[in-house]
Image 1 (tube, rainbow, N blue to C red):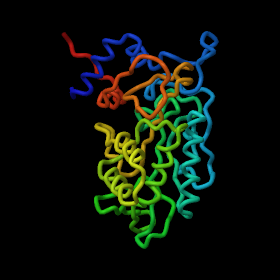
Image 2 (tube, rainbow, N blue to C red; image 1 turned 60 degrees about the vertical axis):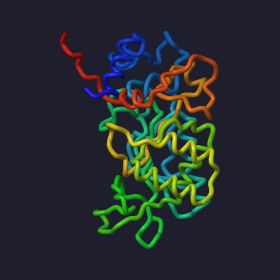
Image 3 (cartoon, one colour; image 1 turned 45 degrees about the horizontal axis):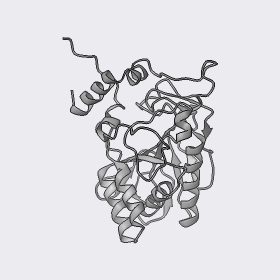
Length: 282
C-alpha cells in the first residue's frame, strides 16, 4: 500500500466520524431530521448535492462538451466558472471554454470514471486550444498535449496548440475571484510550468502567481491531467455549517471562519480520492 493511502486509512481509523463518512458512503444527507443540511454535503468523493445550480449550456465564452446531467455544482461555484469564462471571452475574444463533468443534479452515487464529483465542488474544464496557426477553435474533447504544446485531433485530422494565453487568463480569473474559493487545480506538471512561465513573462501580480503555484498539482494517482483542469472549490464557512466537509490544506488567502485547523497534508487529501482497500488480516 502506498504511503499516502496508508496514512489516509490510518486517519480514517483515528477519526470515527470520517470513517463513517467514507465507509457508509455519506455521513450527511438532506432529510427531515436535518433540514439545515443543503448545498455540497459531505466529502467530494462520498457526498451529495442539494439545491445546486447548473452551469449554463451556452453562456458567454463557454459551452457544454456533452449534453448530459453532469453540469451541476454549488451555485457559488457554477457562477464563478461562468464569470471566468466570460472574462476570457472579453479579454481575448474567440476562445470558448468546454465544460466537462461537474456533478449530477443531486450528486451522490458513482459518476464513472470519477472517484469524486459527487458533491458539486469538482469541475472538469477542458483546455482552450488553437490551430497551429493560432486561430482559436472549440476543444474537440480530452486531447492530450505533449511537451511541445501540441495535441492530435484525430476526429478532424489536425494538430492543435495549447492556448497558454487564454488558459492563464481563465486560471487567473478563478484565483482572483473570492467566491470561486479555488483549493485545487489538478493539472500536469508540464502545463503548470507553461502557465507559470507565461504569467511571469507578462508581469502578473506575484500574489496570483503564488496562488497558482500552490493550487496547481499533478495528482498521484488520478491521471496526468494533460488534457483538462480538474478544479475543486473549498467549502465556505456557511457551507460547512450546512454540511460541506473540509478536506485538505487550508489556503491562507481564503476565509474559513473561526474553528480548529483542518488536516494540512496535501498527500492525504489526494489519497482520500481513492477507494478504500480491504484492511489487512491480522
